[in-house]
Length: 573
Image (cartoon, rainbow, N blue to C red; front, side, top):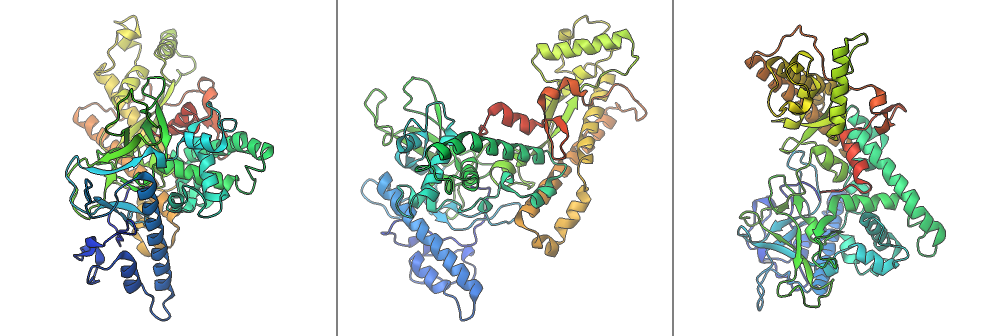
């Protein structure tokens, strides 16, 4: 599942009873092909993708497309039968035509990289119209793992993601082809981690392109966490139950594939059948819905509900009486791609977990910059030392970090960062009329000089982040601009270069905006060397240090801190 747009070839497949009405009119996506007499998708492939003599590339394309079409057909037949869903493009008694179809190929709006399957509208869909619904019976949840392996293997205390990873490995790699209940669904999942390519699956050569980016330490941190969890949960099962958990099947490679699927496709749903009366949540792999791609501008979300007609106090079946539903957030035109919103995440988050990003269209893209109070210089006066101690005590009282990472966006920066800097940059002169720091209102400028130091400190923090990259934004632009050479690089290398360039552009825009603001307000003194915001000494944050790539200890980044605080796996909300 990735942010995608524009599909090269749309092949709409439903059940075996499908009548190919969507091919009545040729579209602009069909290029120069003329489609006659409403052929079925299979006939369309046979006629238009039959290789000419000696054309191996066309033969490969036809073979791949035919395989995808067959997988789609089997998947939708299974979903229609097991989920009791009407997925045909024609109406029946009490059932409207199914409004969407599966596209075989979509393209990333920023990079034009191939992004696999997607969902498109077969007909015009009004705002608020139902896009699709999927019964919980055909979804994969922790309950699926418990019913398969038993509560002895999947105890209540086990993390949902780990339970889902175990069941995914079983369905994909342990069972003979076609024997799994979910085999039709598993067949339409990306077959390898390279098909999705989140950064935690990258090799050393691709990760070289992320040097200097906050994404690199976060990627390494997640790689280490996944390895540690494999050793903690899977290896004991392999050793104690080798007849069920074969070492050849439940290996690290398949573990990474399972988490690639989970991070990029699993959704958090409300548990409408919770027995404790609370609004509990659960993680689920939702067939069909997980083919819908992301757009930061979409307001549609994947949600769950009780099947209409059921009453809460009636006896319900946890599998049949709960369903996943998606509605259109706006009018969708025929043949337009359907999108949902995966959340207001930065491109680094999407690169790390979903395998796409590095573009300029994400309005929530951000880069973390590090801000912290710099201890007073040796030999400082007693008042300055006392003020420093007061600031430290105030931060601890407010449960605030001594060193903080703040996201800087392309068009804004958080007010919390300014409030933090106003506190950190207070001088003894500015505190003369107030005995306690909690008497200040840091939501407003403390004073002209203080505000000047605040803006300059944010500029320095952004420039410090820019200095961490081994290349400049102009050099990255030149690499990307050489289309021939850039195209020879692997997809991961291209993604990494685009990502680091977008981070640099964002930081440079922030610096330019702050310099204009400071100049317009007459705040900056270029020769000033007052207290500045910097990094604390190690003793103030060594409890948060981790081992970096070069073996030196350093403070965790904001993204790494979120990984630690949330545990494994990462909370995707």
